[in-house]
Length: 516
Length: 94
Image (tube, rainbow over all chains, first blue to last red; front, side, top):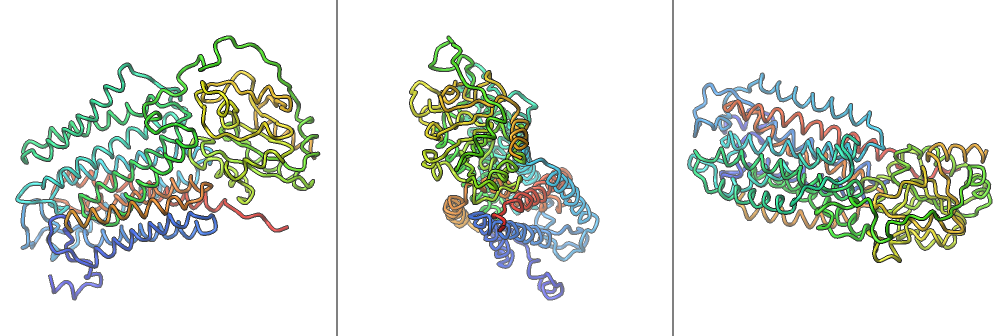
């Protein structure tokens, strides 16, 4: 060993790093993973403002490079010939004196290259409006990778330094079981979320009878199986881990199918969190600091985002997870009798005329804007108005769109300066001074029933005070559809409201023409 | 490393995560999700270890597949985050 330490340029990293077995840990390796973890913290820290975010993203890349390079050097594939240091048949990674196995190294590099090509192609081509389903798809990959790593560690514990007296230690088995279970839930849950977000599956909740009993039972079974797996002898573990994996995949599906489209921002955040906990569990198994730090960061990030989303809908996390929201077509509270209430309908020319006269316009975008891809036309409209001396601001509700920050990305894509984009609590007091509230593709987030109607399913949700604006324009496809919560909106029928019934993009383009 | 040291790192990292994530501006929540996605693929470390050990072929192939999946996420996640962040602009000075 000492010979090699002096010989190779990367030799400081070459000593075995079998952390979990309590063998001598090479301090340089541990340090490299720690540095990588610190870079990941800096990556998230950079996102505190758009100005520092790009540097942050680069820190993230550096952290990943350090982690991957360290692993490639320490755990490079070796040939077994001439190995005199084998402590078990499945323990060949101890043989550092042997030559590098170039064929295996090539396979690894090819695997990375395939992933890189696919990843970069998708990242370049994806439309910004499709970001929620892309994130869901990416989550599923992390989950599946966690399952694969967990299984690989189970099948070849020697390579991971997990062998204790010829078997895997009980603690390692618990960590492994948890990692596989969380990874599998992340995978199958994300696949359903992806299918719902991309329209491959109906967004409405699918409610199985007795689903709470089934879900809790499955969850309990997973916990029992993990315990049995940890206590079982080396020969009897296989059926347990197979059952554990299958049940975990199953509960991922079961957990997400009853959750409706409107709750997807919470689901996507929650799965984000799970993917982090899966990485952390694997980090425990491998005794790897980079994985543990990252897992904790990502886990808390997703949990905080879920909390922010729930708070913005005034719903508890439990009620979201229990599912079924928006399943009722009859609509809560108001009763069946849907009398036709009078509303005013306007044209693009009317809207353009009044927008020109305004001093201050606040635009409230929602998911409808994303569907219609109206963000570029909207920006054009805002530019024309600003040229005419109108002050234009954008107001974003935390749950607008299908994932946290969805609207902000779309506006950024349309080159809306981020200083003009405001959060709910920062702008809500300004509606009293606004001449026009311009609602495009949003509905529930401006519904005053959230403030007044205790029987409404969205009661208590913080909403924009558009009723305080002198004039309200409401772009909507038709009077028929109501928001995801399935409730009527009093804003349609207010005196100062003008309904602009059309496709959002078409309507805004017509307003732009009329303004010119 | 013993279990308690690992647990200490984990618990402290959770607190770091808590404070760092609360300081992220809501306008960047979508890039936050994309980049957390990319960094949680550090799980590739486990896949690399599995793929490098040829002694158990099944584990090796699982490892290689894991490398592909995690690489999609790493490259895709960082690239799409960079693409999004490049769009956030300040007001042009006229």
